[in-house]
Image 1 (tube, rainbow, N blue to C red):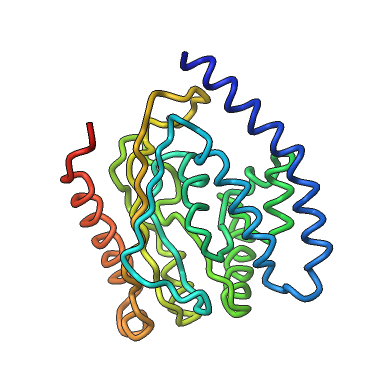
Image 2 (image 1 turned 90 degrees about the vertical axis):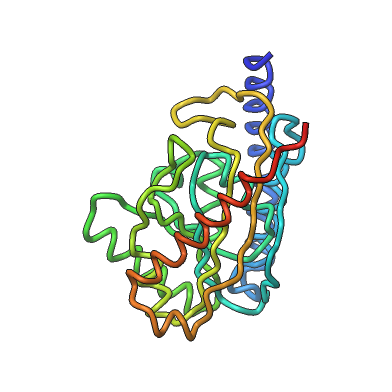
Amino acid sequence: MQVFASISFWLFLGITCISLFPIALLIRVATGLFDRRLKILHQFTCFWASLYTWLNPFWNVSLIRKTSVDPDKTYMMVSNHQSMVDIFALFRTFFHFKWVSKVENFKFPFVGWNMRLNKYIAIHRGSVKGGAEMMRQCEETLREGSSLFIFPEGTRSTTGEMGAFKRGAFDLAKKAEVPILPVALDGSTNALPKGSIVLRGLHRIRIHVLEPIPVEKVRALSVEDLMQLAKQMIGDELREMRAVPKPA
């Protein structure tokens, strides 16, 4: 059953990528001149990515907004990271943002090409020059008014427990003086384990959008304190989420 479901999912993903990428390209051409932040294209990409959780019976995604997110504000969005499924699930927020993702993801046909169309930002791991260029692009993106989404752990957790946060997202928030929007995500660890392409049973994936850390606090706190505050907020929320019994 798992093998059949996995083959069906990856076939569906391949077919939709081939068929939807030309639409994304058309949207970019038709709206690029007046939609400088590519909000329309990103909304289409949110719809495209959401198909894989809407139509997948093994991934039950729920979204709770514990705050009112101002669509006209620019945020530094940060979340814990458990699985590749997180990418699909977090598009379900339909917030406007630019992903910061490892450069290898931009090399995938159709998916990676669409990431480039959206002007998402590539991380060149292990390259000082590439890291500096990534930070420059991030600062420019924030100045232009687009939010950024970064996984501050830098990689997926294999246990579901958060790893140490890296400082890049918080350095950027201080430099650009934008609020930090923490997001807690749970339940995806075993939905598509790291290094596997096999869907593994039914998983309840929950996304909780938390109260932003306001600009005043971003200015006042050190980068290290902001890192700890965001990690504590996400960690506290994860503990609350896991304390609630799952439905039978």
